[in-house]
Image (cartoon, rainbow, N blue to C red; front, side):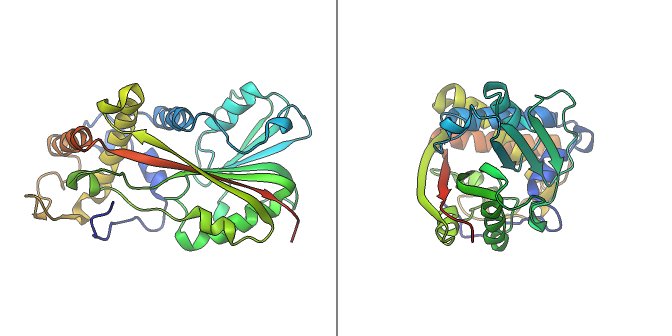
Length: 294
């Protein structure tokens, strides 16, 4: 559901970079969650909501020490390390555009590296048996997705699998305050269908409830989105205009960066709306098999 407003988006950097890297010292005692905790919370939420770390039928590959697996948008490598702790045989590679300080202690079958995937993938054709792209919709410009997917399929072996997990980008059953900080995402299904050498394209979806009405997962998801919204307001509050339901005009008080009271008041309104409207976010998984090399 959208408000019809154009929503501000940063230029020259990706939003996740800024969301994850804003430090509490910049924010006038807003007590932001540490970066590692944010990423770990997001990983755990997605794993629970999606009923696991993968959906493509790759179980037969996971006992083979010749198998190579690539994650695009690996962050600190939590997904790779989680998978590698369960499946000891494959070699896992994670790459991310943002220069995180990768953990020094990680599984021996995990390699993490910094690389801007918008500049192509630094691997030969037919290198990986499985490629996973996770939660990258907001970081990759819409017009760059076809090129990125082509690169992923290029490095994928014949009969290998590609999988994408992402969200709708904006909540469903949201209220006017929640809607301000939402953004629609791309249609991955259409992008995958445009590639002639992919088959068996499958789409599944799951609902992530936001708020106490959704039980323990709902409370944790509310905590995560509260952190996201804090940073959004700090970075872009001055660019937003509100319309409708008694909140017409420019944001005044909480627009000012680092004003804890006003931002906390806004976030309290959002949290209350999530309970009233029973807000949820739809997560999608798309996966397909590569038939041949172009």
